[in-house]
Image (cartoon, rainbow, N blue to C red; front, side):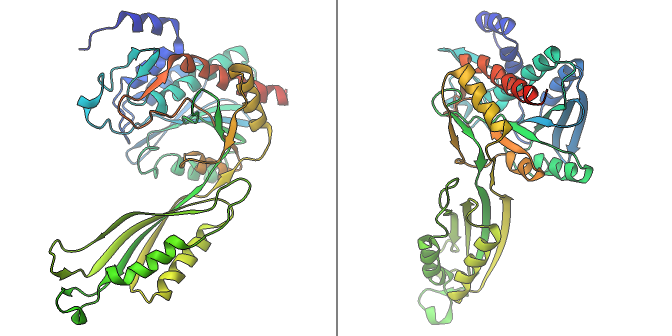
Length: 391
C-alpha cells in the first residue's frame, strides 16, 4: 500500500478534476485494458442525467454517454487506455501512483490522456447542471483502443453510428495538442496514414554462386532509391507535401554466405488532401513493377486525411482559448493520427485541444496542475459558446 501524500489529498479534495484524474491514473489501463475507468465515469455521468450505453467489441471497452436530444450533436472524444510504462525503475515515482512534484502531476497517462478525459467529464457535469434544458445533444465517447490496434474502438463505433444513422455535428478530441502552454496549438485536421507491407521475392543461394540465385536486396535497392526520391505531391495550403518513410527493412538468413530468398519492408505514407490513398498505392506499385520485381504487397489504410473548415466549432474553440488562456493558438494539421479520423467522415467538424504533449509516452509523463485545472473551463466554454449560437 502506497503511503498517502497529505498534500495531494488536500489538493484532490479542493479540485474535482484533479481528484478524478488521480482516480483514473491509479487504474492500470494499458491498452486495450480499461481497468474500470469507463465504469467509474459512467456512474458519475448517469448521476448527472446522462443516458449510458457501454459498447464492447472484442476485448475493447467503449462508452457512449448522451444528454439531451436532437441536433446539433456535440461530442467530446477521448481514450482511457495508456501505453506501457517502459522500465518501471526508470521512473522517479511509481507510474500508476499519481505523484505531485514541482507543480506537476506525474503518472502514466497524466498527459495522454486521462487528464483530458477527466476534464471532459467535469466540464459536462458542470454544463448540464447549469443548462439542464440545453438544446441539442451533448455526448461523451470513450474507447480503450486508441493506443493499440484501433480496430474495435472508435473505428468500430463509427461503423455502428453509420448503421444507426447517428449524427455528429461537432467533436472535440481531448488529445494533448499544446506545445509550450495550454491552448497554444489546436489541431484542425490530420494527415492520412497508409502503410505498405512489402515482400520482394528472390531465389536463395550461395554467395559464391550468384548466378544460381536471385538476390532480392540487390533487386530492391534501385526501386527503393526511386521511392525515396519521388516527390509524391506538393502539398497545399492546409497540408505539407506527402511524406514517405521506410520503418522496417529485413532480409538474410543470419549466415554470411547465404543470399536470402526474400526481403521484407514496411513503408508508410503520411499524406494530405493533395493525394489519395488510391493514387499512392498505384504509383508505388508502378515503380515496383517498372523495376521488374517479383513482389507481394499488403496495404493498410489507418485513416484518411481530414480538415475542419472555418465554422462554429473552430470559432468557439478559438474564442474559449482567448478567454481562458489569453493567447491566439496556432491552427495545425501536423503530428500523427488520432481517433478524430474516424469521426470526421461522419460529417462532423473536428478540433483537437488538450494539455502539453512534451512528456507523452515518456518516462515520468506529467501534466502541469494549473493547466489541468483550466482545461474543464476550456471545454465548458466551447460547449457554452456553441449552445449560445443556437439558442
